[in-house]
Length: 426
Image (tube, rainbow, N blue to C red; front, side):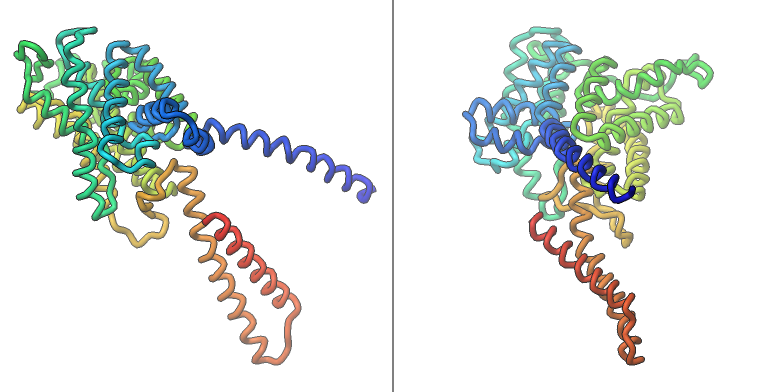
């Protein structure tokens, strides 16, 4: 009876295998970094390449290299404010074209790495302007600052590359602070929001008992949306959906970091309106993503390290906003950049805390697959040493053991298979 049913089961498995492969291929077309789409875009016209780089640049703000994710995020920006979205997309386009004209690395341009700072420059320039929507003269400083993004990025990269560190959003921070400091609240053409010294004095009615739980939960997606300067929970929800499309790990760490920032804000007696507006969550969300699987291999050790980084970043957000408000400047993403760089410079003898070279950094799931491929030869070598140590006493005793010989052979076969897979992957 078993002999009859076994072939039938094997036939069913063979029929299901192509279906699984088809689903996996279909899923791979839209998730992750959409590598197949990138290969197809390389053969297309310049306009298609530019659009692909444009949407990848919008998504790269959240460490996501996926044009569909960028399209979803752009939709969320238009949902928040069409004028802000136009400025953000214009900044991305100008920054990308400027990088092309400067002769920057083509692969970096195609991945959107020269566009995301322009996205933030365009968005925040519009957010902090007091001239309101559709003030067309605002496009002039937007275009000028976005053109400078690749220049500042290239200059900073020449320094950070010595330590194999990313530049994050440092160009955006430098250029936006430069623009706001140069114009100010009383400028006749480009007036900015008047930023007053922040003494962190919460209103008298802001107590733990007065915390509104629904708004506190909403502050998590709002905090993610505040990375782009948006305070709408719908925009934050679309950003999270875009992250989920590319990498569930990035989406989870974004929510975790934003929640850690909100909780820290409550612990530091921050005004509840700032917590509800997501101002305590966006820097922590970025820090948690950076450490939790993007630049480190995702393990439970680096997961805890990401939570620590998010909490540390929330403290730095409080300090930076207080110090920079004295100069009438916003904190921007300075806390994220400083805290993430500190945690990326951590040295550890624990193998599970493994920082990846920038040349191989991808989304967390792919980073983990790369790490496993690196570890496979080491496991094979340790297996070979174990087998040789077990065979040595047998040879000295003069009698072979069939079981150990078989295990040794199977171990060597596994080594050859691992080596073949690694060679194919390379």
